[in-house]
Structures are given as structure tokens and as C-alpha cells.
Image 1: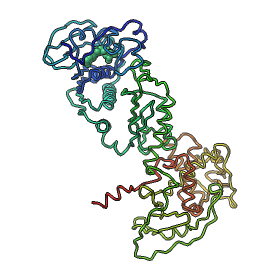
Image 2 (image 1 turned 90 degrees about the vertical axis):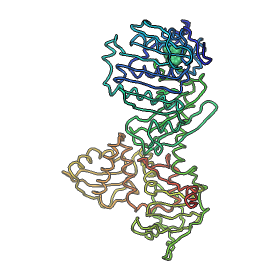
Image 3 (image 1 turned 120 degrees about the horizontal axis):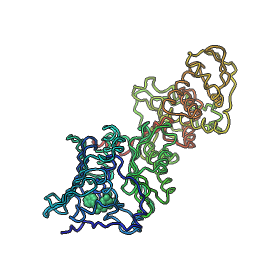
Image 4 (image 1 turned 135 degrees about the vertical axis):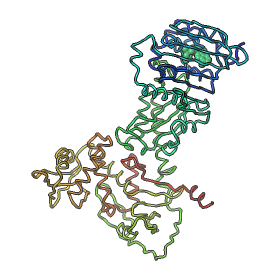
Length: 595
Ligand code: ADP
Ligand code: MG
């Protein structure tokens, strides 16, 4: 009796078969496992149990509870180009199943010994097939549960060259796990269990998409990623993208699925990387788990033997959507739902609770602004000097708050000499001034030096200093590159140097210390994989510039800093990828006080 869900296998007509990219499907155990698991998914299985021996070299066995095959199909399925999934070449353009070529089982039968038990319902007998040397040697009725249990033994026993080519057990096993993870991520409603040499390696009961991500990637992933969700009539994209600070040097935890198929898509991978530009050091890789869904007509899955490469017809749309979606998500996450610099001011009263009478800050405007940064300084009446002098020395001490209501209703106070705290429509925003400044300086140096050297300011008193042997070598190596930034240093015999000029606006106390800081910062970036020298010096210079607090006096107001940040390409993160803003959400504040 035929099960209603069961498909009928047919041999593909030759002209269709020829349209299918030829290729070796099975090159290593993981490929075989992938094909077997995919067949189980195509058969609507809700349980996939995998048994492996010796990383698949001795045995790969997959048992599913899908709709199974009748006696006739159980034989036919091992024929090349026999499939129940497509019948006409037109079907090739709207594929919704994992398999469609009818090649996998035939290929496996050619390179291993196979035993298959399959049944379309548990009441009636199923079929047992044994294949050796590509021929069916046993075909008999058998009592077995509904579903298919297919076992491959001694993969490549008859192709010694292939067998020889296999990697160590641990490498092959890693591939097996990876294939399982990829499929499991996109089929959360299917239970996966994998037993290797009698040890249970994984068991993921059926669950929701989010919980499956946790099962596969571990619970720590929660804190490392942000949700994304966008759709247009052409494409729907959902999933998670990693926070910049969790980017790694390794390409790990990067998953792109198109219509439930794990794919490698260098062009779209690039879209993701672009979205993280300047947020993570060169060579670092963001995590992402993205699910793209679009009409199968727009996806060609028939371009690669193992179907891990596909082509979508309007790649550019997908590219731009991915990029803008990620940028938006990263922006929101750290700056609150809208880092709208215009609307977030002055709606909230801050109650000041302090025993000491609060001294109002001196109102005077410091005109010593940075000419490059602040071409048109607007005096707003706040003295940064006063501001800084009136906060407690120890950052651990309870915050003494200053309620400053300046012109333009700019309401904010400074916490721990470093964080600007101000009201935001969705709560209370904290801005890390040092990181903000670092971001501004970094982009400034980078953009200015793109065309020509930064204007240098000759020092009235050139400063002589001595460096360690290694630092001196560094100095000689990078002397020319520093020139681009307006830093003119010349050797003065041995480990001695003279500093003649600095970029205008940069003030330093001692040339030696500053140079050492600059070098340290430069070397650190180099370690982090920043290979571009200009980028590196810009970062180092921004970092050393934001260490000192003297710049704060040049900064006319809080508004100024925010104005500068607004013009930055990336205003949410420091060049090292650390967040500049933190939002204490109104919701969380109220929740806390409710309990
Ligand atoms: P394809 O998946 O490309 O159709 P395969 O060689 O992987 O080709 O499988 C051939 C056919 O065998 C499938 O089209 C399907 O009808 C049948 N089949 C294979 N595995 C299973 C399974 N686990 N459960 C039910 N049917 C299966
Ligand atoms: Mg298949």
C-alpha cells in the first residue's frame, strides 16, 4: 500500500539529466552524511539519528522516520538519475527539495557497501536491500518501523586513492559535525542525534529556531549576537549578527542559508563584512546566522556538485539589503532604537541628591578650539574646566551629579570624568567621551590623509628624546609614514631622535612618552591584523589623542562632540569596535522599581 506522502521515483529523461551539473557528490564521509540527512529531510522526517564509526571511514548510518519507500522504489533509488523530486527540466528552476539530481544514492552505491531498511508504514512489511560492488545482492521483505535506515560501510573500499586522500579521524569528524550543525540550524523542528563510536556526541530535540541556535552554538551566543529581520517583496532576511566585540580572527560561526540550504556565497559574505567595516580590526570575522528566503525561481541551485554554491538572480538587491540591515541593527543595539541626535534632548528632570550644595559651573567659553575639528565653534557657555574640576577624583566614589542646563536645552551631566549622561526618548543615555573622541579623531586622520599629508605644526622648541633599541628601530621603520600625519621625527645618532613637528591641534607633554604610547598602540593594532599602515597610524594617533584630557578643554561643548560624531561614518563604536553609547532603557528602569 502506498503512503499518501510517498513520492514515486522516476528515471530522469536524458535531456534533463544532461542539464544537471555533473560532479562527484561524495568525496569524503561528510558529503555522504549530508546527502543522507537531506534525503531524510526531503522525506519529511522529524527525527534523524546518525551512527558513525571511525569518523565515517568504517560506517555512516542514518535512520529517519520519514515517509519511506515501497519495494519498487527501494530498488530504483540506487539508479543514476532516479529521483522522485523533479520530472521536467522546468522543475529545475523552482526547486524546493534538498535533492533533485538523483545522483547521491547511485554514487554512494558505487563506492561503498550499503544496507537499507525502508518502510512506508509500520503495519506492512518493509524492504531490506543490500548492495555490494554496485549490485543489489539482497532484496527481501523485512519488518521495520516506518522510515528509512540507510547504512554505508567501508566508504571508498574499492577506490584506494580516494581512501588515501581522507584526512585524519579528527578532521573528518569535524566535517561530519559541521554538516550536521548546518542542517540542524535550518531544521529546528527535526530532532538530531549523533552517536560516534558508541558515544552520544549530540542530541538536539526538536525545538524553535532560536533555541536550536542555542543548542548548536551554545548558550553564550545570546550575548554575542543581535536579531535582524527585514523583508522586501523580493527577499526576506532574518537571523542574527554578531556584535563587533565578539568578532574573531577565525571564520567561525558564519552561516548563510538560502531557502533552507546552507551555502557559501562570497559576494553576500562580502556584504556582511562591509557592514562591519571600521568596526572590527582587519582580518577579524563577525559571526552571523542569516536565513534568506526568496521565490525558488530566483535561485539557481544547480551550479555546484554538492549544492553548497547557488546563484540568486538579483544579487545586488540582496547585497544592499544585508548591508543596510546589519548596519542598522548594530546602530540600534548600542545607541538605542534611534540615535537621533535631534530629538533626544531635554525632556527629563534629573533629581540631584547630594548633601553638599552643588556649585554651578563657571560659565565661560574657552575659545581654544581645534581649528580643524571645530571650524565654527558655537559658544554655549559651559566650561569644561569647571566641569572637570567639580567631579570627585575617585571614579569609584558615588557619582556626584551636575545638572547643567545649557543653551539649547542641552541637559546632561558628566559621570566618573568620562561618561556623558543625558536623557534620551527611550531612557538614559551614557556616552563614553574618550571612545567618542577616539572615533572622531580616527575618522578625521583617516580621511585627511587619504589625499594629502596632514598640516604639520613646527614646534617652537624641537624636542630631543631617546628610545629603547627596539623602539628606535620602529621609529626608523615608520618615520616616513608618520610624516603623512604631520609628525616629523629625525634620527639624531644612536637611539636619539628629535621631534620637529606635530599634526596641528595635537599637544603632547613629553615626546618620549608619547612616542612610546604611539608605538605600543601601533604594535597592538598590527597584532590584531591591521595591515594598512595609514589605518594603523590613524588608530594609534586617535588613541593617544584621546588618552589626554587636554583636548576636552578645546571641545567647546557636549553638542560639539555630538556634532562631530554625527559626521562620522560610524558613530556607534570606537575604532577598536567597542561601544560608545549605552542606553539604560526606560522599560528596565521602571521594571526595576516595580519589584
Ligand atoms: P535525490 O535526492 O537527488 O532525488 P538521491 O540519490 O539522494 O537523489 O535519492 C534518490 C531518491 O530516493 C529520492 O528522490 C527519494 O525519492 C528516494 N529516497 C532517498 N532517500 C530517502 C529517504 N530517506 N526516505 C524516502 N525516500 C528516499
Ligand atoms: Mg538526495
